[in-house]
Length: 173
Image 1 (cartoon, rainbow, N blue to C red):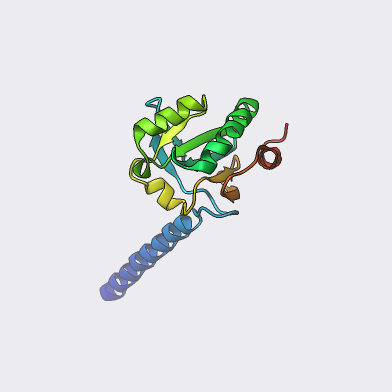
Image 2 (image 1 turned 60 degrees about the vertical axis):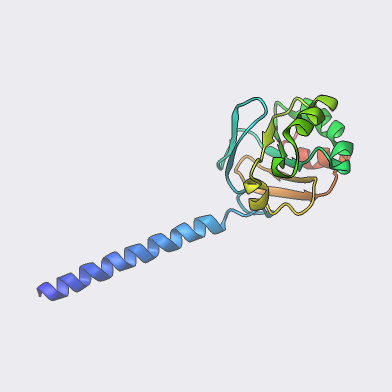
Protein backbone atom coordinates (compact mmCIF):
# COMPACT_ATOMS: atom_id res chain seq x y z
CA UNK A 1 0.00 0.00 0.00
CA UNK A 2 2.86 2.39 0.86
CA UNK A 3 4.52 1.71 -2.48
CA UNK A 4 1.27 2.40 -4.28
CA UNK A 5 0.89 5.75 -2.50
CA UNK A 6 4.52 6.62 -3.20
CA UNK A 7 4.09 5.82 -6.91
CA UNK A 8 0.85 7.80 -6.96
CA UNK A 9 2.56 10.86 -5.39
CA UNK A 10 5.49 10.60 -7.83
CA UNK A 11 3.14 10.41 -10.82
CA UNK A 12 1.10 13.30 -9.42
CA UNK A 13 4.21 15.48 -9.02
CA UNK A 14 5.48 14.52 -12.48
CA UNK A 15 2.08 15.34 -13.99
CA UNK A 16 2.03 18.72 -12.22
CA UNK A 17 5.56 19.51 -13.46
CA UNK A 18 4.64 18.61 -17.04
CA UNK A 19 1.43 20.66 -16.88
CA UNK A 20 3.32 23.65 -15.43
CA UNK A 21 5.96 23.42 -18.19
CA UNK A 22 3.30 23.29 -20.93
CA UNK A 23 1.49 26.31 -19.46
CA UNK A 24 4.75 28.30 -19.33
CA UNK A 25 5.58 27.41 -22.94
CA UNK A 26 2.06 28.30 -24.09
CA UNK A 27 2.25 31.74 -22.47
CA UNK A 28 5.65 32.44 -24.00
CA UNK A 29 4.48 31.26 -27.43
CA UNK A 30 1.62 33.76 -27.31
CA UNK A 31 4.11 36.65 -27.24
CA UNK A 32 5.21 37.21 -30.82
CA UNK A 33 5.89 40.33 -32.85
CA UNK A 34 3.08 39.31 -35.20
CA UNK A 35 -0.46 40.52 -35.75
CA UNK A 36 -2.88 38.77 -33.43
CA UNK A 37 -0.31 37.83 -30.79
CA UNK A 38 0.60 39.56 -27.54
CA UNK A 39 3.45 41.99 -28.12
CA UNK A 40 6.71 40.78 -26.55
CA UNK A 41 7.33 42.44 -23.22
CA UNK A 42 10.26 44.79 -22.71
CA UNK A 43 11.66 47.50 -20.51
CA UNK A 44 14.03 50.21 -21.81
CA UNK A 45 15.55 53.45 -20.56
CA UNK A 46 14.70 56.61 -22.42
CA UNK A 47 16.79 59.63 -23.27
CA UNK A 48 14.96 61.32 -20.39
CA UNK A 49 16.39 58.62 -18.05
CA UNK A 50 12.92 57.22 -17.35
CA UNK A 51 12.14 53.54 -17.78
CA UNK A 52 9.44 52.64 -20.30
CA UNK A 53 7.91 49.24 -20.61
CA UNK A 54 5.38 47.06 -22.30
CA UNK A 55 4.19 44.30 -20.01
CA UNK A 56 0.75 43.39 -21.26
CA UNK A 57 -2.57 45.26 -21.01
CA UNK A 58 -2.21 49.05 -20.74
CA UNK A 59 -4.25 52.21 -20.37
CA UNK A 60 -3.72 53.32 -23.98
CA UNK A 61 -2.75 51.66 -27.27
CA UNK A 62 0.93 51.94 -28.21
CA UNK A 63 2.88 52.79 -31.35
CA UNK A 64 6.39 51.29 -31.32
CA UNK A 65 8.71 52.71 -33.97
CA UNK A 66 12.24 51.30 -34.44
CA UNK A 67 14.68 53.78 -36.04
CA UNK A 68 18.30 54.92 -36.37
CA UNK A 69 19.75 58.37 -37.01
CA UNK A 70 21.53 57.31 -40.24
CA UNK A 71 18.33 55.88 -41.77
CA UNK A 72 17.02 58.02 -44.66
CA UNK A 73 13.40 56.78 -44.47
CA UNK A 74 13.48 57.38 -40.68
CA UNK A 75 14.38 61.00 -41.38
CA UNK A 76 11.54 61.27 -43.87
CA UNK A 77 8.89 59.88 -41.51
CA UNK A 78 10.07 61.62 -38.30
CA UNK A 79 8.09 64.84 -38.87
CA UNK A 80 4.89 62.86 -39.53
CA UNK A 81 5.40 60.73 -36.41
CA UNK A 82 5.93 63.84 -34.29
CA UNK A 83 2.82 65.46 -35.76
CA UNK A 84 0.71 62.36 -35.06
CA UNK A 85 2.18 62.11 -31.56
CA UNK A 86 1.02 65.69 -30.93
CA UNK A 87 -2.46 64.85 -32.16
CA UNK A 88 -2.89 61.45 -30.47
CA UNK A 89 -0.72 61.57 -27.33
CA UNK A 90 -3.77 61.74 -25.06
CA UNK A 91 -5.17 58.56 -26.62
CA UNK A 92 -2.09 56.63 -27.79
CA UNK A 93 1.40 56.17 -26.36
CA UNK A 94 4.33 56.44 -28.77
CA UNK A 95 7.72 54.80 -28.14
CA UNK A 96 10.44 55.69 -30.65
CA UNK A 97 13.09 53.01 -30.08
CA UNK A 98 16.56 53.91 -31.30
CA UNK A 99 18.57 50.81 -32.20
CA UNK A 100 21.54 52.31 -30.39
CA UNK A 101 23.85 49.34 -30.88
CA UNK A 102 23.84 50.14 -34.61
CA UNK A 103 23.87 53.90 -34.06
CA UNK A 104 25.77 56.47 -32.02
CA UNK A 105 24.14 58.01 -28.98
CA UNK A 106 25.29 61.51 -29.98
CA UNK A 107 23.85 61.01 -33.46
CA UNK A 108 20.54 59.83 -31.98
CA UNK A 109 20.40 62.90 -29.73
CA UNK A 110 21.16 65.15 -32.70
CA UNK A 111 18.37 63.44 -34.70
CA UNK A 112 15.90 64.05 -31.86
CA UNK A 113 16.95 67.69 -31.67
CA UNK A 114 16.87 68.21 -35.44
CA UNK A 115 13.32 66.88 -35.77
CA UNK A 116 12.18 68.36 -32.42
CA UNK A 117 10.87 64.99 -31.26
CA UNK A 118 8.93 65.19 -28.00
CA UNK A 119 7.71 61.58 -27.82
CA UNK A 120 9.59 59.18 -25.54
CA UNK A 121 12.89 58.12 -27.16
CA UNK A 122 13.97 54.71 -25.90
CA UNK A 123 17.48 53.30 -26.26
CA UNK A 124 17.91 49.69 -27.33
CA UNK A 125 21.63 49.65 -26.52
CA UNK A 126 22.14 45.90 -26.87
CA UNK A 127 19.54 45.31 -29.63
CA UNK A 128 17.69 42.78 -27.47
CA UNK A 129 14.32 44.41 -28.05
CA UNK A 130 14.84 44.91 -31.79
CA UNK A 131 16.01 41.28 -32.01
CA UNK A 132 12.96 40.10 -30.05
CA UNK A 133 10.74 42.09 -32.42
CA UNK A 134 12.62 40.57 -35.37
CA UNK A 135 13.39 43.99 -36.86
CA UNK A 136 15.11 43.31 -40.19
CA UNK A 137 14.68 46.76 -41.76
CA UNK A 138 14.21 50.21 -40.37
CA UNK A 139 12.03 51.96 -39.82
CA UNK A 140 9.67 49.28 -38.55
CA UNK A 141 6.49 50.19 -36.69
CA UNK A 142 4.13 48.10 -34.56
CA UNK A 143 0.68 49.13 -33.36
CA UNK A 144 -0.36 47.48 -30.11
CA UNK A 145 -3.89 47.71 -28.70
CA UNK A 146 -4.88 48.27 -25.06
CA UNK A 147 -4.90 44.52 -24.43
CA UNK A 148 -1.25 44.32 -25.50
CA UNK A 149 -2.00 42.58 -28.81
CA UNK A 150 -0.13 43.51 -32.00
CA UNK A 151 -2.71 44.88 -34.44
CA UNK A 152 -0.45 46.09 -37.25
CA UNK A 153 3.16 45.69 -38.33
CA UNK A 154 4.63 48.11 -40.87
CA UNK A 155 8.05 47.47 -42.37
CA UNK A 156 9.52 50.58 -43.95
CA UNK A 157 8.46 54.17 -43.94
CA UNK A 158 4.83 54.89 -43.16
CA UNK A 159 3.07 58.02 -44.37
CA UNK A 160 0.99 60.13 -42.00
CA UNK A 161 -2.34 59.35 -43.69
CA UNK A 162 -1.90 55.59 -43.56
CA UNK A 163 -0.69 55.64 -39.96
CA UNK A 164 -3.57 57.89 -38.92
CA UNK A 165 -6.06 55.44 -40.45
CA UNK A 166 -4.48 52.64 -38.41
CA UNK A 167 -4.45 54.77 -35.25
CA UNK A 168 -8.17 55.44 -35.67
CA UNK A 169 -8.77 51.67 -35.71
CA UNK A 170 -7.10 51.15 -32.32
CA UNK A 171 -7.99 54.53 -30.75
CA UNK A 172 -10.97 56.14 -32.50
CA UNK A 173 -11.30 59.92 -32.12
